[in-house]
Length: 517
Image (cartoon, rainbow, N blue to C red):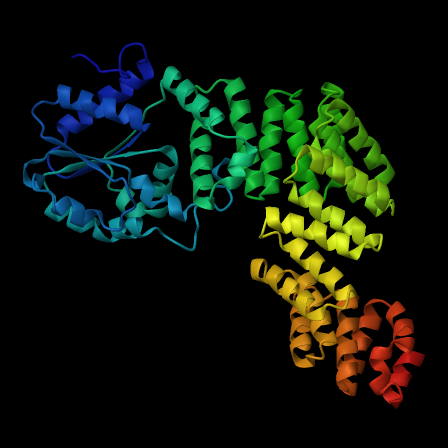
C-alpha cells in the first residue's frame, strides 16, 4: 500500500491516523458518520489516498462553498447517491462561522449559547432520516478544529452517532506556509478595514494554527501578536492584553508586544499599567517612537501635559516626520492653554500629511480658543472635505457658527454630525442650543432630551435645557430641570441669578426660592 503525502512514513503520527481511518472506512457497511480534522490542502490528498487504497468503494465529494441550512436535500438530489459508499463533505464550517464570535483562546462567547446554527439544528433533527434514507452511505465530514468543537457542543444528537474521529496533525512545511501567510496577510491598519465577519475568519484561522502542537514557539509568538492586534480592532481589549501576555511569555523582550499591550491597557483605563508597559518597551528599544508617542498619550490622559510634551518631543527627535506625535503634541499644548504653539504643532503635522483630518480639526479648536472664529471654520471645512463623515468636525463647526450667531447653519452642521453618529450627545446639545436661539423651543427641548438620555450626568446640558424652558415661559419645567443641574453642580445656581434666559420667570417665587437655597 502506497500512502499519498502527507501520510507517508515521514510523519508516523499522520500515517497511524490514516491507517486507522482506512480500516474504519473499509469495515463500514452502509450508513456511518466519521469526522476528520485536517486542513483543506491535506483533505485533497487524503481523499485521493482513500480513493487509491479503497478501489472497491464508490467515493464522492460534496464541496460546500457557501453556508447551507439543509444537507439532507443536497445529498438526496445527487444523481449518484444510490451508487455511493462514501461521501466526503467539505466546507460545512462555512455554515457555522456567522454564528461564532471568537474569544481569547476559543473561550468567552466562542459558541453563542442562545443560538444553534440552522445546519446543526437540521442535522440534530434529521439524523434518523439520514440513517433510514441513506442506508448505504458513510458520511465523512472534513472539518477544522473549531467546527469539530462546535459539533461536539452544539450538535450532540448528531455527533453521538459518529463511528470515528480522526485528528491529523498539520505537516511542518504546510504549517509553516499557513502561518507565514497569516503573518504576511496584513497589519493592524488593514485589520481595522476588515468587516466583523472577516475579522472573525482571521481570528479563527490564527487560533487554529496556535493549537497545532507542532507550531514552534517563535511562530506562536508572532501569531499571538497578530491575534492581539485583531482583538484591538474588535475593541476587545482584555483579550488583546491576554494575547500580548502570551507573546511576552515566549519573548519577554518583545518591545512591540509591550507597546501594544500598553495601548490595550490604556483603552481599558489602566493608564498607570500602560505607562509601565511603554517604559519597559523603551528600556528595551529606546528609539521606539511609537511607544514614546503612546506614553505621551497616557501622560496626557492623566493630565500630565508637560511630561506628555516631553515624550512627544522625544518621539519627534527620533522621527521628525511623525505626524501623529506632532498632532498629539498640539493637543497637549492646547490643554495647557498654549494655543499659538498648538497651532504651530498642528501645522507641522499637516505639512507632513496634508490630508490629516484630525490635525485640521484640532487646529480649528485651537483657532476657536484664540477667538479666530472664521479661520476655525475654514480649518473644520478642510477636515470635512478630507473626511466627510468626521462627525466631531461637523459638531465643532456647529459650535463656532452658533458663537457667530449663524444659528440656522449651526443647527444644520450639528444635524450633519447626528446623521453620521446619532448617539453623539454633544451634537444633540449643540443643536438644541441653536434651535433655542431660533426660538424653535419644542424642537430644542427634543434635542436637549436626547442629549440628556445619552449623557444624564452632564449638568451643562440640563442647565441649557432649563434656560430653554425659561425662554419658553414654562416655569415649572425650568425650575425642575434647573434643580437637577444644581444638584450635579452648584455653580449653576449662581449663573442662573443673572442669566437673561430666565427673565420671563425671574420674579416667580418658586424660582427665587431655588436661587436662594
